[in-house]
Image (cartoon, rainbow, N blue to C red; front, top):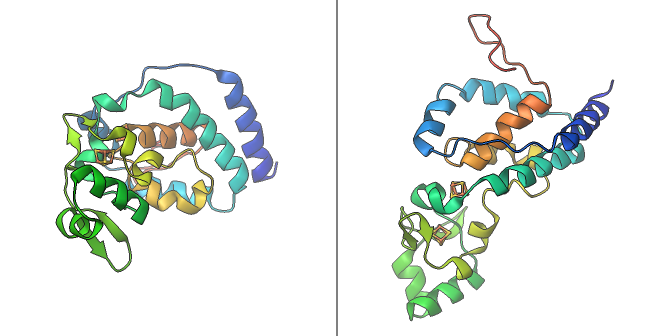
Length: 197
Ligand code: SF4
Ligand code: SF4
């Protein structure tokens, strides 16, 4: 069976599952779970290479739809604690208005500019994080709305970036782990044992 056909069959099987499970959300526990899986994830990246990108996107997006309702981001806030979202000119205008400063003052006071990454919020944790919640939720930047990007197309193409969030975001961790399972990915550790079912 060709790889794209294999992905399609697994996708259909997966869609039939309709199961709802309790998922691990504790960032400390997630950190423990991801420890030592770097080589495995490199192997998974190789495993995905050459697969039908559209079929993988459909599978990832179905996992995304399944997992998102099981996650309460207001009990986590981990991304806002340790990542710096990029912001557009549109975001800057909104945030500058909220702070009551000009866009130039906002960039000087609250942002960093990078030749490659553009403009991003400079503080970690984010200055708008209160407890584990975003205090400007309705006005949050576009990147914050899209994070962790698992509902978008181009998963294989963006995999390396997304794996960067594997130990930070429980959504990413569970999607990638379920994706490995759904695709039948096996990882043979150095001692010869199979690391993944
Ligand atoms: S603006 Fe809100 S959603 Fe974005 S990083 Fe800050 S606290 Fe999180
Ligand atoms: S997007 Fe991920 S890291 Fe951010 S609050 Fe939600 S579960 Fe936590």
